[in-house]
Image (cartoon, rainbow, N blue to C red):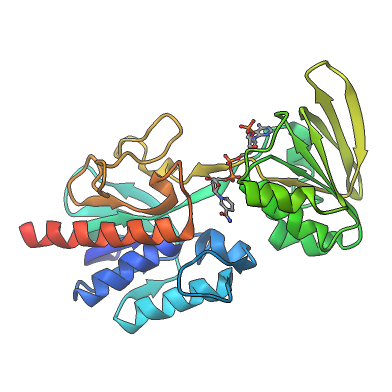
Length: 309
Ligand code: NDP
């Protein structure tokens, strides 16, 4: 196998990875960044971002990520297309395999692999994935123009997706398992004020219904065991995320939900020389700006570590 030695390797290309890259490249540490399975991360599946400071008129998620990438490249980050498929963090230099074939030896690693949308785990949900079942309204909403759709979840993501879909679709049913929404007040008001969004409180999905053409609806059930069929062609999940840490199990300390544990107020993991930034270590905030901030912290921690060697 062909082995390359690098001073600092960044895994992931969301706001955390790119911000770490901007800082490390400006510090002349020539970082190599692997973009991973979803170049640009979760913001590439968003439309308008209105809460990233510096954009008074808002910016499109993909445009924001493209700007961050250009900024990282401008200072010398080597941004590469490729997926990290294996790691060995048992000794320094750390060994990282990319696309199953290329081996990198890294003095330091910043893990910024983010988080991925969760599914309910129903067999019927799996059967109709890509045939009406989706976890990304902004990616797939277009296919359900003027049709009826279901959004599962009661958090900010669910409200944002329901709101987005309500501008494209005929009707949006929100299936919320609690008797209230967990989303922020502003998001709650938006969905409550949309005439074509109907919120079904206290319901869980028992089955995604469908036929050869794809999803035809869902069978939902409430706490009293009362069942209801909703007819819809799209079934969107918005029930939270799973941190992308599978590769690091056995090396990095993870919490009970799989998020990387870092020393409070820093990006420092249980292994000196490995740092974590962004949603992969953040079960609370998960904002582009907090991810970017933690990417900055990781770069500074990493730089100090290299200087101490
Ligand atoms: P959340 O964890 O906040 O919400 C998940 C929702 O899905 C909850 O309503 C939860 O119900 C429900 N849920 C979870 N599991 C199931 C299940 N198995 N069956 C049915 N329902 C389920 O995740 P979000 O992705 O919405 O948000 C994550 C973070 O990102 C939050 O901090 C949020 O504020 C932030 N965010 C901010 C945005 C913005 O500011 N523009 C946009 C999007 C997200 P229950 O309440 O019962 O647990």
